[in-house]
Amino acid sequence: MIPLKVETLYNGGVVERLHDELTRVIQNICAPATLAKKTRKVKLEIAIKPNEHRNMAEVVVSTSSTLCPPEPLETSIYIGTDPTTGEVAASEISSGENPAQNVLPGVTENMPGKITQFPHKLANSAN
Image 1 (tube, rainbow, N blue to C red):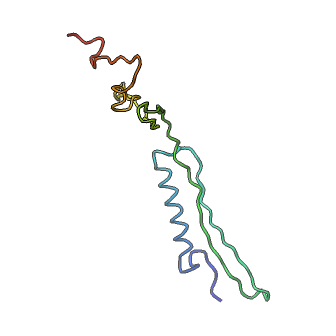
Image 2: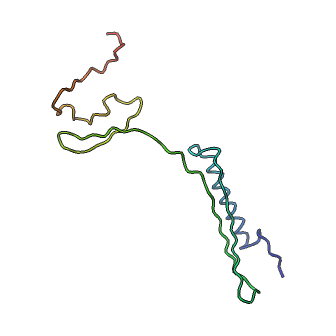
């Protein structure tokens, strides 16, 4: 009888699958969007189902890994309605963008009420 070894099961396929999961875990560890110290896991499961006579068994090998999900991304948005069309829209608030980014393009000209457009000069700039 040939001795049973994990490294020879399915002509080395078991070791190959285990290696693939280890590679996925290492790639996940190296991904900058994931938490560095979060534990990752690799699971190798070998299920053996013997027949009634106990002289043969079906073997099912499965691998899986528990990875660290990317860290959540957070941002803020302005939400508003175009008073001329009633269309709802949103715009992301980001540093370094136009200070009037919370106003939809072309809306200020059509908006009734007290809206004052300021020149695009900095308050501290010299004339």
